[in-house]
Amino acid sequence: MALDQSFVGRSYPPTDPYEVGREKIREFAAAVGDANPVYTDPEAAKSYGYPDVIAPPTFVFAITFKAAGQVVEDPQLGLDYSRVVHGDQKFAYSRPVRAGDRLSVVSTIESVKSLAGNDVIDIRGEVHDETGEHVVTAWTKLVSRAPEEA
Picture 1 (cartoon, rainbow, N blue to C red):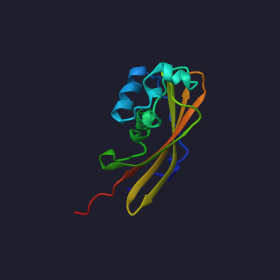
Picture 2: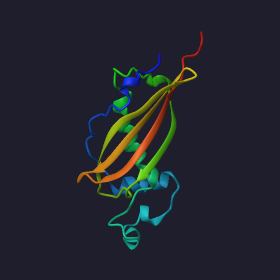
Picture 3: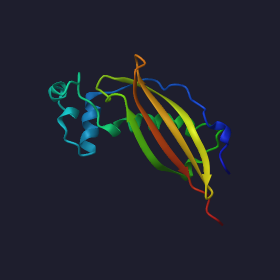
Picture 4: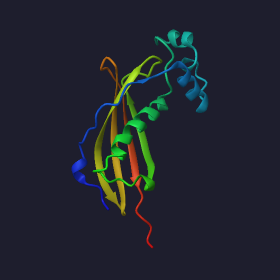
């Protein structure tokens, strides 16, 4: 069943703040195999003009994908998550994510379409810190695969 086009433009409430910790940044950098010292060493980060360690660019995915859960779990939308695969991801940064940031996300449905029986939904996540400063915009594309023929 095709998703309802009237959901395009719908925004969801901001998430509770997520506090970015140094150790979480270090763990993520190690997990993705990025040894850049600005991700692990506060002094190295300061030498590049940052107040503390910064996060690798894809770190924010964990925060924005969790926020997109508000869309996925919206019973009115009717998305069958058991059929969903992640289609695409992109980010546009105003500044890097830093240790100590307290980030909230507002998710908005940007588009809903049906392609070859698959539902495709684009979700934009606007990430701001606790002062209201824009940090990053993340776009997530989810594809709900068409049911298999019997």
